[in-house]
Length: 291
Ligand code: ARG
Image (cartoon, rainbow, N blue to C red):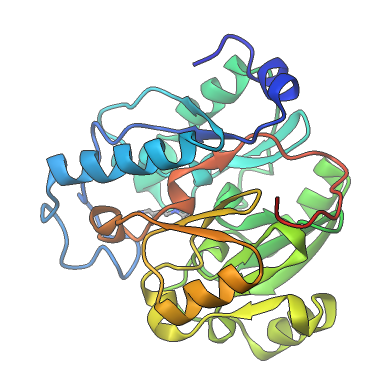
């Protein structure tokens, strides 16, 4: 881990992703439908190999910073849930389920070590970080998913803490329990998403804010392979698995798609994006084509 992450990202202009090695990763409880039937069904060495392959792929185009793995918190590997970052501020997660609450101190320490100003929502409001709060790539806008994990009342909190417009979206399919499982803003103002994971009013809001030619609608088969759970850095896209049709569609828009199997993490309900947290989120986002 570099001594001062914020200086580092400013220097080389690359994206920086926070990740946590799966040293203690396993499925040892069930807090989402993907975990059901998977307790103790994981293969640790395959998980480690898959995670290392993801790191290797991302590290070709971006910086990867590591935080230490800890025993007793198997889902710590999903750093997307550490908090939501904007500029030098981060709003720390407060997990809905007691099984994940012990992770909060480790994420807090990692952010402080990197020099972030750590903010919190009121104790009674569950909030699951960049699992549910995703920056738009063209507007100064934070998309916010609620309905399963984060409390809807966090929208107003985030607006105030981060001084940014927040667009709430209601999630209605329990398999897509975090926003980042079914919704991914991409470079160039594109949006890859699975509409059926949202209620009708939220689908209408998305359609009203994102022009039709920028919306990449994902079908259920790709969605269930966590294709929307994508890490995007410039024109590069890293995901577990995508159909030929989706790959072709993304390529036509200038993206380079890297498929890197993360089946061991699917058993816990996570994939590429869940395993990362983008640490450089500029306060003012600028419209840019994939480069
Ligand atoms: N087992 C974890 C949970 O249910 C998976 C988290 C996946 N993270 C994400 N950002 N979607 O909380």
